Length: 258
Image 1 (tube, helix red, strand yellow):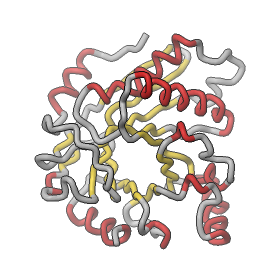
Image 2 (cartoon, one colour):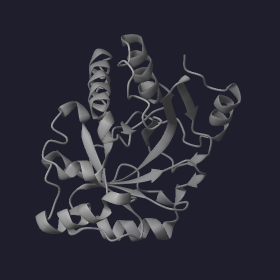
Image 3 (tube, one colour):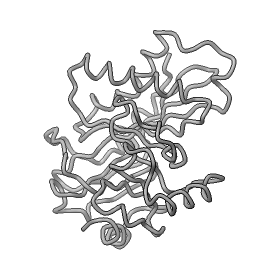
Image 4 (cartoon, helix red, strand yellow):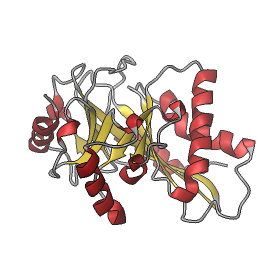
C-alpha cells in the first residue's frame, strides 16, 4: 500500500504556489526549467506563459523497495506567473539490486505503481507528465514494462497529455535505446554523467549526435555547462544547481533558444 504521511500532504497543499488555470498543453514549449525539491520563485518569467518557455516541476518522488511503495509529495513552494501551467515530473527510485532475484511485479503491484506515477495528472492543471527514472542496465526490462503499462493506462483513461522520460546519456549511445514509442519524449541528460562521462563525450565528438535517433528530439542540460551546438532547435530541459534567478534563466535562454 502507498504510504503518504498526512503532514506531508498538508504541507504540500499549503506550499504549492501555482494557481488553478485552464489545462493548456504547451506543445510549442522549447525550453523547460526543471524546478526541483526546493523553494522556487519563478515569477520573473511573467509574460512567458504560452511562449516557448515552461516549467517542469518535481511533483512527487515514488520509491519502490522491500517495504513496498512510498510516495513523498513535493514539500517546497513553487511560485509561478499568472497563467503558466507547469509540467509535472515524477521521480522514481529503486534501491540498487532490488529487482535482482525477485519475481516480476504482480499485476496489482504494477497497477499501484502506475497509479502513483500518474496521480499528479488529477491533482492540478498541468502541461504534461515526465517520468525521471535513472534505470540501470539491470533494470531495463522493468523500465520497458513500466512504460508500456503507463502508456496503456493513459489510453484506457483517454488522457491525451504529453508524456516523456529522462534517460541516462550513456543509454542513448546505442541505436536500440528509445525504440519503444511508449517512452514518449526521451530526454538524455548531459550532466552528472559519472563514470560514463568520457565515453559519452568522445562518442558525441565522433558522431556529432546520439546514435539513438529517438534521443535527438530533446536534451537535458545543467546551467553553466557547455551546451552542444545540436541543442538549438531541440526541446531543452535545464537544471540549475541553485534556485532559479532571472540571470540564470537568461544564461540558459541565450545558450539554447534561437
